[in-house]
Amino acid sequence: MRGLEAGLAGHLASGETTLCTCWKLVRRDGLVLGFTDHDCLLEFGGLTYSPASGLDSGEAPARLGAEVATGEVLGILTDAAITEGDIALGRYDGAVVESWRVNWAEVGQRVLLRTDTIGESVREDGVFRAELRSPQQGLQAVHGRVYQSLCDAQLGDGRCGVDLNDPARRGEATVIGLDDPYRCLVSGLESFAAGWFAFGRAGWSTGKRADLSDPVMSHERTGAGDVLGFAMRVADWIEPGDTLVVTAGCDRRFATCRDRFGNAANFRGFPHIPGSDYVLRHPRNGDPLDGRAVVK
Image (cartoon, rainbow, N blue to C red; front, side):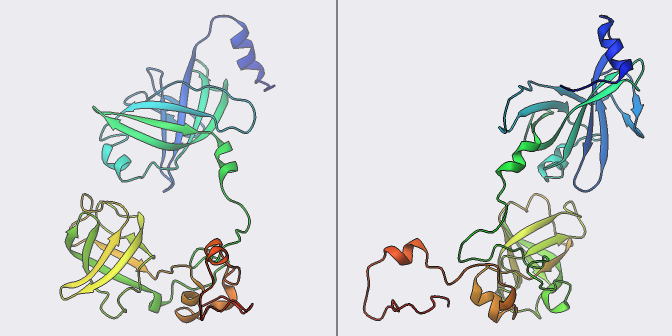
């Protein structure tokens, strides 16, 4: 059972309370915002909690065990606080939200109720609704090694070891046009081979998507320049003149790791383990079914 600070416990026992809820929101880019359902500004912990365009809590059922507990908060979209554009751009995805119960007459009397992360969010009629997911969601993530033919490391991380700061593996590009809602035409990548940045990442330096990064799904070359394809719509948020830094991509196959990056020693997959398709297929003339390595 959670213990309460003596002052807050006495306030609750008095039967006549002056309580409100405060939310501290920390975005992944480091921006910190404070909101409260009280009608005046409150300040504690070095942060000011604003009632204007703030949040209101929805249903938050409590669950036993390791099941993920969910709740939601609702708020008004404004240019001064949380904008529709920032939500659509994903700047609030994965943000951490602390929910506090506070005695607004004496803010030193407070208790942290829960710490959640923002999951799905919905925008409609000038209002947003954000789902809050409890820390138990981390139990649903895959931990440890996965036995599969593809590498389970991220290109450039500590397990991979490839240096993405090498000028041969990163390029600076400028948007010169839009091919379709998911693809943009860029200049500046002429010195790289076509397909070099497929399955890589694009970090936006300027424009509406500045400081955000997106996975690059394809990299093609045309007579007009290089075309980068993305998994999400980008046409609504970029325009000619926007700049980005693109890093090399990897399809996580052993052959790519060996031939493109010379990094076979750090390959984190299991290419010698036959998959179910290999085990179940019918033998054919010429198939190497004599126990030799199946890696290509």
